[in-house]
Image (cartoon, rainbow, N blue to C red; front, side, top):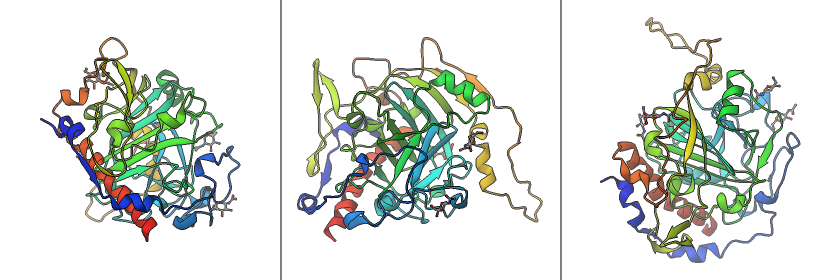
Length: 390
Ligand SMILES: *[C@@H]1O[C@H](CO)[C@@H](O)[C@H](O)[C@H]1NC(C)=O
Ligand SMILES: *[C@@H]1O[C@H](CO)[C@@H](O)[C@H](O)[C@H]1NC(C)=O
Ligand SMILES: *[C@@H]1O[C@H](CO)[C@@H](O)[C@H](O)[C@H]1NC(C)=O
Ligand SMILES: *[C@@H]1O[C@H](CO)[C@@H](O)[C@H](O)[C@H]1NC(C)=O
């Protein structure tokens, strides 16, 4: 039996000391999530010196060609499409998410946003979902290539935190992906276009990274309830519950699909009654439900070398004397895509509405990895409150 099957029954213990710590928060500062910007009109720093007791802001939001390098401290992310998205990670090697959460910087799959670029080969599998009310990209990665220690279980980044200043402090997110679907994305990608140059600020988002897994969920501010759909209070229970996907089927492939919305994190149906569970912030708890994977369709498979060809330009190859050839991406290669599973049975469709969690259905080693971000997140809580106590 895989770990994931046991997950809902595993108790998570938190120190009671955190309770008193949380009451120490003092803030009359404007919450990060209420700061709205219209691209490209953004300030040098969104938070600057006004970060409260966890401040000042580590990097900057005004990013351009001069900040386009591997030392960039850009804290403005774009999550545009499978070929062009960013995630938060550390600027310092061998770091951990709990240590670095307030000072994460943007790492992107492509140059062009004034950020660091995720080295080619880092991401070993990914799935992008166009859901009605959110965009979601999840996948597997060698997190050491974005400065995270291989052993780090990681945690959640979101625009809130106990002091509402966000993790990272001042981090903001934009997208041109709302309104697209798998088919329109495919045409856009095939034509070589990088999409609309009109970018929407994503106000409510979650980003987990740790134990070789990442997940990003970007809730549409025009959707019905972005704050609940991208809730930030389920930080201990990881990607499985906050950005539901068929994780066991994702490593090794790169796909884009349409998808139904997941239920809000914490919401489940038991005996026909819709119930909302709230993650406690102290003591021991069990998660009282398992998730159902929303139905997906119109999946298209891409090649990572096509998706992220431009990333290689940020890492000029060096020739060694031993005569070993260095692999380079072929410029001008046609972008190949494969349409699959558009009809009937889709392997990544959870499909059962009975509440049976499909992750328990398979016994793939990757599933065990999913469990780890869940265990991990208690470290994040410790780090946040530890800072506040200091
Ligand atoms: C480029 O970004 C840097 C860092 O935010 C900023 O100092 C500089 O003024 C920007 N340059 C332009 C031309 O906007
Ligand atoms: C996208 O394409 C437009 C038009 O060609 C260009 O001006 C812009 O710089 C590109 N953006 C990125 C991030 O590559
Ligand atoms: C399509 O389904 C097959 C078998 O069900 C699976 O092996 C394959 O990975 C799926 N492809 C996509 C793009 O979902
Ligand atoms: C994902 O695949 C890569 C290589 O294909 C492998 O090294 C890595 O361990 C896999 N990740 C997980 C979590 O199974």
